[in-house]
Image (cartoon, rainbow over all chains, first blue to last red; front, side, top):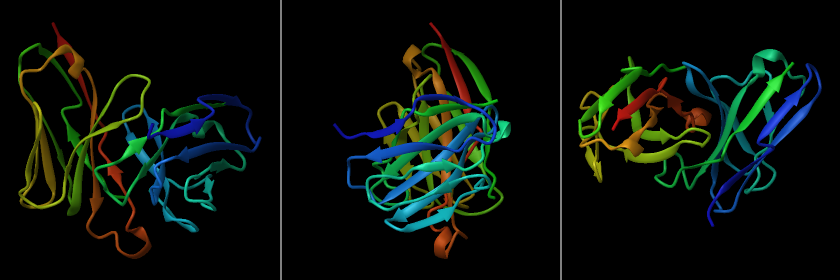
Length: 113
Length: 116
């Protein structure tokens, strides 16, 4: 089954404790991206990757890091989480930028206290 | 970053009614996408538009890429209860060249409620 898998689905952590949210896709897609969703703001792009070892900033990259060492994985790293990073995070992949086969993961709800 | 203004923010309609929502921007977009998000789920792509003036249908859904490339609309005909959810427009800005080629901007969403 074609899917984008995020882990964990829910996470509560403390300020400053490094964490990683994993994202994996099994469709051999080149393009992957991370978004955060906050009430009234829609989804805002954090980082995206056009292919292995090719990443770039979206609209809200501050406080986040990503890596793309393999085509299927695109982890989101919060080196020192802060309460303003409490949000719902989504990973997505598609065959190409803006492709019709755009798949989103189930989301990760992160709370930073 | 780029801004997409989506309206209305919310809609309360009766089953069977038609729905219309739109998205506008002050700058040009190369691609317009429409997504639906159900509670607790990630967004699902409904329609993708790639050319100015393009009109595309997907069942009861119809979307158009505005001629000016600064707007798009989504219509839902004969709404049913399962149409409930949040609808998002999204687009790739035309001035996102070079390494910004992959940027995707979303609107704030339209919350649709359908009363049986």
